[in-house]
Image (cartoon, rainbow, N blue to C red; front, top):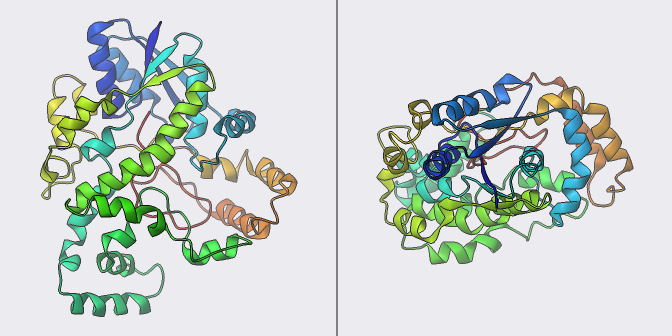
Length: 365
């Protein structure tokens, strides 16, 4: 069957394309982006394709494309997955399926090799987290009286909170207070630790960085990334293959010490993988920081998608589940905010409301 590959601006998909092209020199590659330059990866992907000598097909996603595709995306998902990356992935797969039956992707490399910037957190918090318990309790008390939004509050909170309580992958957007205001039937008894406690127990012999990877393998990777990757590609009869998740690759990655994933003296990530790929991927890609497959949700909600989004709310019939006025308030605040640019080390999207955590960025397709 004809095989192609997804190609973004990132190291992982570029590595897959570079290695696959050694076997199939005219490997067809497919990239997705937007007409908002600061959110788009198309230019870098095209440069990589030229450097590797493979053909590349670009798909530009517009607000009209999102509004048209979203009902189909929700239908194919079966279960709700709140990740805007679903949209470009669905449209990328739709285009690729015209030319190929199987497509290769770079999913899994960040979890295995330490690619998410959040994995540096244990290093940055060490000055507080390694203090005696009595001092940590005092600092935690100080953090409670610091006003929300003041610099240092979050650092003290996270530094004095055990990793089992503070880390649960790339899933947090709303605080407990925000959820109580948003949800009609809020139950504070249901906590993330109910899900993650058994996984933390299995990882109790690991260092904190490796523990975070372990949590992501069992929650974020299989609950978000692989769900959307499978369902958005199979929606078009396209079979996705993820070479980084091969058992042999995992066995190698699992032997790496933490300083070959996120070294303490630099801001690098995936150090071992980057070294292994030197001379295989273009140098411009091998050294660049992670771009988190961004989706310009906020700029679009401020402009072309504003009326459509409110129409969805008005006709949703979801008022018995969520407070629609709270959601409308989020939309109004979004409309007043200045446009934002994606951070290369931040989340894959900017929430219209809520307080995104400094969780791992979504990996490029």
